[in-house]
Amino acid sequence: MAGRKQTFQIIAHGISPEDKTIWFHCASLGEYEQGVPVIQSLRTSHPNHKIVVSFFSPSGYENKKNTPLADVVVYLPMDTKSNAKKFIDKVHPSLVFFVKYEFWPNYLVELKRQEIKTLLISGVFKKEQIFFKPYAGFMRKALDSFDHFFLQDKLSKELLKTIGITNTSVSGDTRFDRVSRQIEMDNTLDFIAHFKKDHVCIVCGSTWEEDQDLLLEYINQAPKQIKFIIAPHAIDAAKISALRKKMNKQSVLYSQSIAKGNTDNIETAHVFIIDTIGLLAKIYSYADIVYVGGGAGNKGLHNILEPATFGVPIVIGKNYNNFPEAVKLRSLAGLFSAENSTECKTILTKLVEDSNFRNKTGMICGHFVDSNTGATKTITAYLKSKNLPL
Image: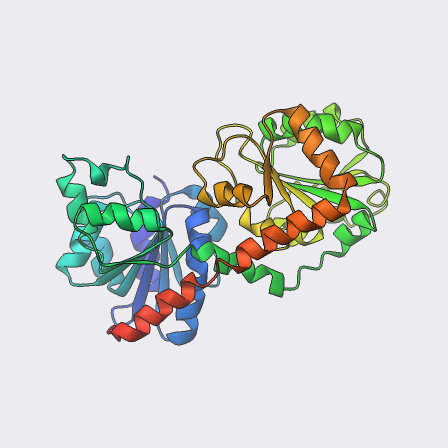
């Protein structure tokens, strides 16, 4: 609420009436990451346009408020008719993208009233959503504001067809394009290489307490030649301290070693806890096996595509059915789900001890990402074919 109070001031400072703008709305950080490939493409093709990114969630805004990809980053004011008109008038975009979902009816209706081209990218629809209820006329009217829907799957296309929406394309998920580019970047982290050396390394990314409870039995019983990197989702000193007390392995914190220029204990430690943000994508490049957090509890499974692009096998918790990429990758035998600590221990032991099995599983993950890229090309080809007035 405090952040929204600054929105119009930020816009006034960053956008002048004569500027040409393109607006992206992202609910949170995950949706922003889906939007990045399209933002980068438009940055290249339309360098004179200013990019405006709006967020609903603090996890998105706080992480990306200074991103060099955008000229203006703001919270989107609440969905009222007056806010919608004022925001759109001030930003005056020539093209608008909503990413994945989170539909703001008053904004969408105002965009259509002003005849501003509006696209949905990486869209996903499910039959239980309000759009498909008999009483949801107002929300369906909001969907009519979109000029085109770029969807992740055929089911979404068929659902929209049931309510008369046919201006759709199944383009896939732009996240695959986003993560596939990570492998082309410089992912070197000398301190991680120093810690890992030639050991098998299990990276546990974006873990919550429930995930750590799932992993602890194996960590405590694992052979000494196995190294672990744990990157908790929340950097909470008290919780990290409690975790270290539960482990019988020597551990080291990023904040007490690398951040202070001290690498003395890195090589001898068996567990490296990354109590900072922004390094996980690069750290995945050093993994032999990855555990992705969020699925052991009800927090929501974190991004499995980031490690998958590096061609490593993935282990998760039991709650993943609402994440299509996890369901698909498990069906391909590139991902394993553990119901409890015993199952987790069994899976990790198999992956550690059988290198052929580990490598084969990892190849499935890498191929899964490679074979699903291309959504961004589909979207940019559409923009070129329509010759939109930008």
